[in-house]
Length: 127
Image (cartoon, rainbow, N blue to C red):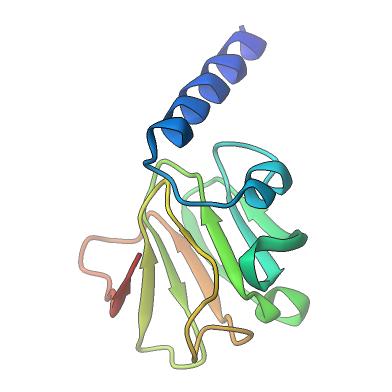
């Protein structure tokens, strides 16, 4: 049953990519391991392998290499809110969308990622 569910999810996600609802490059499709996670990449345009992946709703704060994130792919079923160096600003990425190069204040300055944030969360930038 689990294999059937995974296969169904893969087929649905592939259909969404073909239909144009998601914007990640071919590299992101290949390097982001599952169609149900958010992937954070250290390099612009989804370069290299993901430095962090997660699928469960929650608030995740970072130190170390994950703070150096430059691009993200959101394949979760939720909106994702990214917090940069200014903890009062939020960058939100809709499900099925990606950001090739995070703007100043978020690029290489990631503080936290919130999967499925509350409806009243601040989204100063929307993707």
